[in-house]
Image (spheres, rainbow, N blue to C red):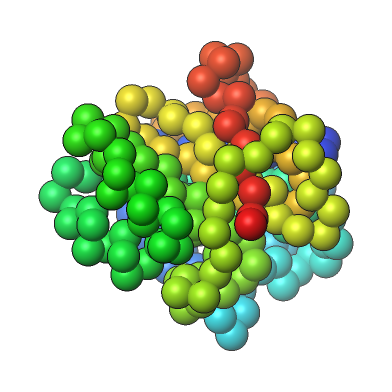
Length: 233
């Protein structure tokens, strides 16, 4: 079944629970099959015709069939695979909070000084949340521009934004909590309005038969999935 691309400001985020069997884009694995199935539904094509390659900087792109509007981004967290889809360029990152991270050290190395200060000056109770919020926003931005963490040290600061602000040709960002400790950030060309979340299990019989439901699964209308807006300063 063909799926319509999300309208401006909306991102569809598909979660394949247990789909992180392999990160390889070149081998036949559940992760690759799930990605091909997702993309084929938006492209209106046979999954077997979808070919995903990495550009010289490592960003996954659609080699065939050609598409000028569909943007997608892949992220992994624990055993789960996430595919975010939008009608524009997109970067997405999902992270689970880990209290073993050396927050101040990692923040100073990889975050913008302003972001690192916000983490450092947060209350002990909020510091872990603030760090992973900043981290997912930064990684989603770097994925959207196609560089990854190679340019993290020189990337601009990410700050809260008015959801009605016009982004133009710049990147707009949104952040939500998928649960109490799982962060999702998405960066696109449009101010974020809504993230539509769909869950699909790799162990599901429909998965094994290669059949992906259309917009089945759980579509959440929980207000927590209405993202807070962020922008580049």
